[in-house]
Image (tube, rainbow, N blue to C red):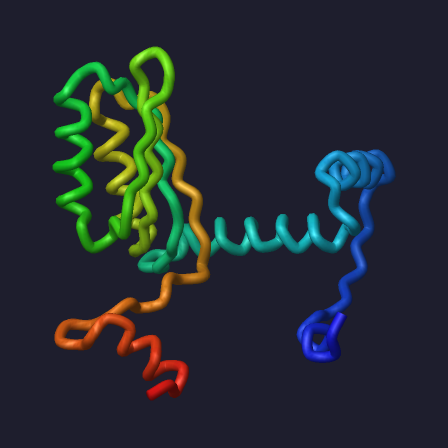
Length: 162
């Protein structure tokens, strides 16, 4: 590990019941991870993100994963109209057809937690939508461009590239 990365790490001591520690070690082994720190850091990140998600006005990036019936045209139309209503929050979408007349769609989103929850709630209310799952992170997408900027100009300004 480089000195630069080590400087950014901090040590933490954790006491756990022995049964829970055994379960953690089993999970680490089954997932093929090399140490407990990876899992603990992941769990802490998830807890911090979940905490930020309840903070009013918190801006988060994430994905919305949906499974819905694709044999009824009104469902795709209603989903498209809902996404259009949330155009500022919807960055992109990926759609695939599943078996048994179902579709899986994943939206890449960014916005306030209130807007993202509203988007999920409105899509969840569409008859034929079976599952919706929102996963968020506090790490945001970089700005791609602002009105009047050439694509990539903001990123090159941020990095000091001319």
